[in-house]
Length: 231
Image (tube, rainbow, N blue to C red):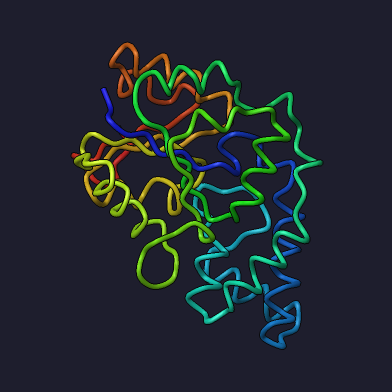
């Protein structure tokens, strides 16, 4: 059983296929304008940094890259908030409140996302997800760590804040590099989701202490005791 569960939002609570291309184009337009680059130059940089125009478990965070590159956090936040809307997300494919309540009965839930707080809250509202189920939201606009936002640093901060050893924490998301690896490297577990519906199966597997046995049923299970290895 876990004492802390971390959730990504985008692609975890809803199907990222609905918006992945639009999100990529928005990020490319912003970065090209900020750096005075052509679209072709921007796409080459994005490909090198793992920022992809399609859904992939190997995709990396554009926000973390922007902040490492010296982009003004306030400028990116303002642009992202102004050019992002959850209206194209298919609510029929989203995770249910019933499933999330099941997780909340097991352990404190924290949203850990590279999106802005406004966009996270707008997305939860659009999907009809009860925000009160979550004990905390940690994101670039709600981050108390030193230096630019990074999920790895944020994970360490959360473990300390909640007094939970890494081995008693679980991270759930749709991208290995951004959502799973940060906790895994500290010794925690992860579940990499194929689709949001996989969360219901993960919940059932946790209740039966059978994550490893149920591996492959809509999710891939990673054990912190065997870092980076799929069980």
